Image (cartoon, rainbow, N blue to C red; front, side, top):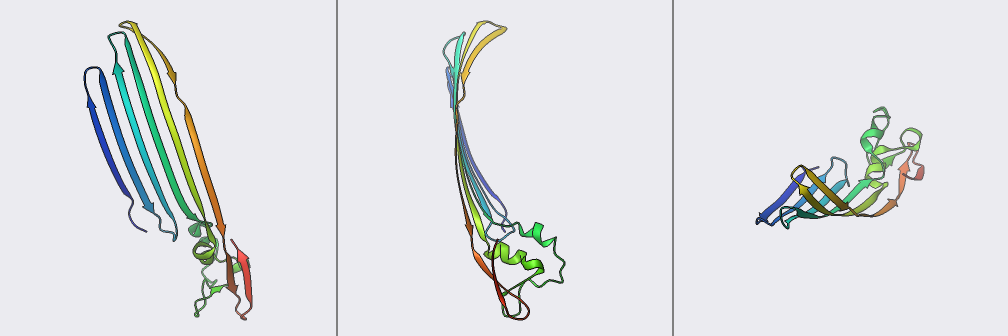
Length: 171
């Protein structure tokens, strides 16, 4: 795997009656496991409006998008359950029929993957009324929308026993 990457752009501007902020963030990580990666994009926009000494408003928008691609099996967790006396691969490169027909290496490298996409849209509109210095009355609406899409891919993997017999399995 490689080190995570993170990039952020942040801008702010304003006047006495309007203050605006924008942030854009990108994050990417490739994990130690083969075929495992994660990406995230964030966009946040915030605006504060000051109409006069009594009225103000905020309008904020955010978009978050995640994409993760992971093997069907966590190889590190599975590998700890099997003693190193079980072969993962034979010398000819074929996957071995390890303990009880389970081979963590074959499961991680060839067993398939899950592909997950997630999007979140968030908004906030807040109106503020300040009749006196120590009192602020606020009304807010904060809608959220979520979209998620997942796919699972399972592959047929061939394992070979010590006597040469082939066994087909899915993970």
